[in-house]
Image 1 (cartoon, rainbow, N blue to C red):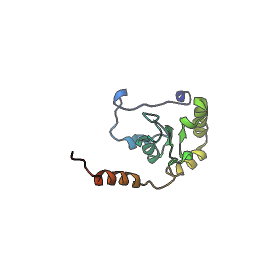
Image 2: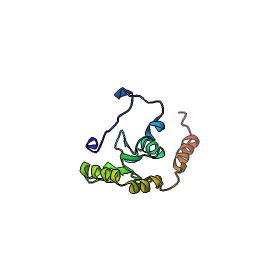
Image 3: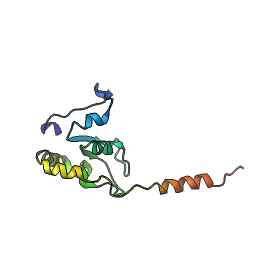
Length: 133
């Protein structure tokens, strides 16, 4: 469906087009498809962050159950009204340079990440009494 809007390049060893520097390649594009490998609530890999950090508009497919991400900084297929709505939004952004620039200038994270829950879990595991029976 995206190929109807223009050429879509696909990279990686599986495609026979490996790359050595992801950011160098991403900087050449307005958009980057960065669908998550699994649609599990809270599962967010580096893909979205890499695209955004390289200056691309991420075309994401994922679930931000914790509402940590600024949904105005990317296009999410999971929250679009179907594939047609997703493609229509990409097409609108493709035509509207000002809208792309506004979107690219937005922060991706809504709040500073905290590792407190991980620290608490580790502290409980480390300090938990060991049953030697």
